[in-house]
Image 1 (spheres, rainbow, N blue to C red):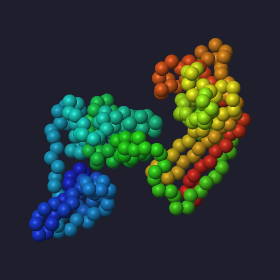
Image 2 (tube, rainbow, N blue to C red; image 1 turned 90 degrees about the horizontal axis):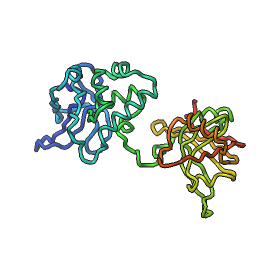
Image 3 (cartoon, rainbow, N blue to C red; image 1 turned 45 degrees about the horizontal axis):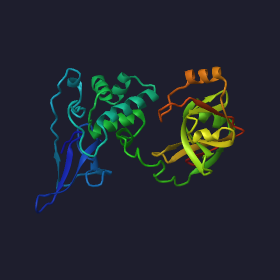
Image 4 (cartoon, one colour; image 1 turned 120 degrees about the horizontal axis):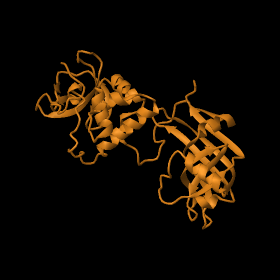
Amino acid sequence: MRAHLGDQLVIESPTTGTTRRDGEIVGLHHEDGTPPYDVRWSDTDEVTLVFPGPDAHIRHVPHRQPETADESSQTDTDEPRPPSAAAPAGTHDPGDIGRRVAVQRRRRGLSLEETAHRARMSPGYLAYLEERPADPSTATLIRIADTLGTTVAALRGHGADVPPGQGQALRHPRLRDLSEEECRALLSTHGVGRIAVSAPDGRPAVVPVNYEVVEGEIVFRTAPDSVPAAAAGTEVAFEVDHVDEALSQGWSVLAVGPAAVVTDPEITRRLAQRAHTLPWAGGERDMWVAVRPESLTGRRITPPDE
């Protein structure tokens, strides 16, 4: 029995010959394609190590012929979906996969050629995947995810609409306080954080904002009639965090201090010029608010040996 990545492992009933279970082979343990295999079962989407028995056989998946010179240098598991083909029902836009791959690649400081080499595919196909809608096989995504230090689910956008932290807790987690210096380093220069304010109706509210760190102050821009604008002239709490679902660990930083509107036209001009991104919420948001942290605390959850 020999298989390639992307082939199907089918287990049939020994009496009726009907399929009892099937799944995609997403991992090989021997270069010649002999068992065992890592199989992602179609009924549970779980990956398990399988030593096929006499009731199992391989269903080799046919591959389309490449249509361009760049595609002709791909491996048989790197077949792209033609640009005109629609995404399967119930899946995310295939174009989003390429955008996520490109973002992760740039974050790791890898060139397209280096990434393609590590993922064992042609640079032409990786460029195709990043620039056009494509539907790569699970085996292809596994290699890309491994190269980029992420997961197939993350590249596909699974879980994008659910809150973070639904994974299992570490068996013996270590929770430690962060120093003020560590907190400032984690705040870095910019990102997305949450500001806690008393809304105009008197109720507490927590709102995400795009922020910048400029000369030790946390600044964000908003609209004068928005909930975040209520922070001006009050003491507020600002929180930013990161959760690593795969490793069940993460950190959070909390800044507390007075907030004030930036009124100097020259300073607001410089802030707008230095901003790393426009507010994700869009619209006219020309009011800058600065939070001066008087208290900066944080915590990190890690395995016990870190």
